[in-house]
Image 1 (cartoon, rainbow, N blue to C red):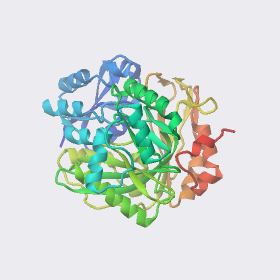
Image 2 (cartoon, helix red, strand yellow):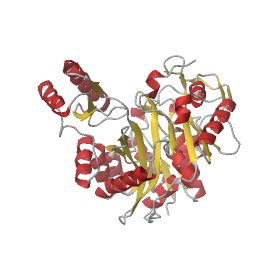
Image 3 (spheres, rainbow, N blue to C red):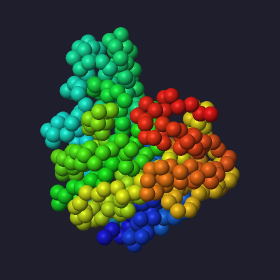
Image 4 (cartoon, rainbow, N blue to C red):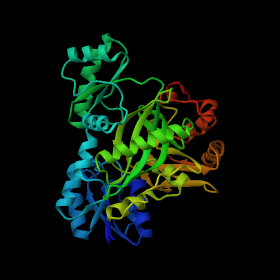
Length: 445
């Protein structure tokens, strides 16, 4: 049993981890930048240490300062949350070198899945379907043109070290190759300090469906069903749900088995997610693995009645997983509440929350770190909360979500609540007729 866990993150995920640790009888240490001094995760932890200035590089990405905070508070484990250092193999190794348990996978596991070329090669060996494309990195425009002709248009160029749509370009014909190649490499270098890019066949009319998995140090792996994350804008998820309205029992079994093979191929230890693209014919292809807890883990927790953070901590303490696969027994939907203006191209809207009322009632969960009077800093991701509803059916979960959104009052800033309200009333969304391109034609009223 850990005696004290330092949470190397901020906002709602830091608060989420602190709550579970408290239930398990584990003391917690919050770290914070000077901009987050008044955040709830600082107030709810047993101890709190300031680790730097507002910019992430000076605080939440500053490994030296985080390790110093762990040392002076005698923390015996660090939970990285998601984002920041959660998938940083160097950070995981430094924790191990200092005798502090990193609550997540080993550096070797992170490295194997963190680089997309290596991950793809690993998946091919494990018999997991992958999107057709080239092997290795693209070295020239001429090579890119030749490979695109071989793979067949449309193709997509992707940053090997990237995510979130950075360093990514879709190419529909040869005339677009040179510009796409140059801009993708420049964006990848600027975003990840690695300009490596590779090519895949562009899957048209895709769904983004992921499988939640858990593995322990004894070689056991199980999956906890799927999440549909297809409602996204510029590759950033806005709505997630479980189970997917596109799923069939046969497809769930196939994808679940593939996810287990993927995790087993690297002897994965911790909770994690295998992400797939699924085409309109229900063919699925490995996209990437997230070697951490995800923002949308809440919908899985609600449909299988399972605390994923607690499971993650238990695995890090050396306990075995349950060893069985889970099927969804309910339907859950999550709306990300972002400090953004949906009527103004989702422009960030930092500032002071003057009034706040969060919804409640049967089947409603709110994960958030904000309160009335809280000032949202401009330095970090714009998500300020997650609204999750759960019900017996998808239709009921949507109806509950619309009711809860209607009750949600946040004044002083702009939020994505109006967008979600309109989405919940959209006929195609309610019927489950959508792909990752759905929001390209969605207009705010």
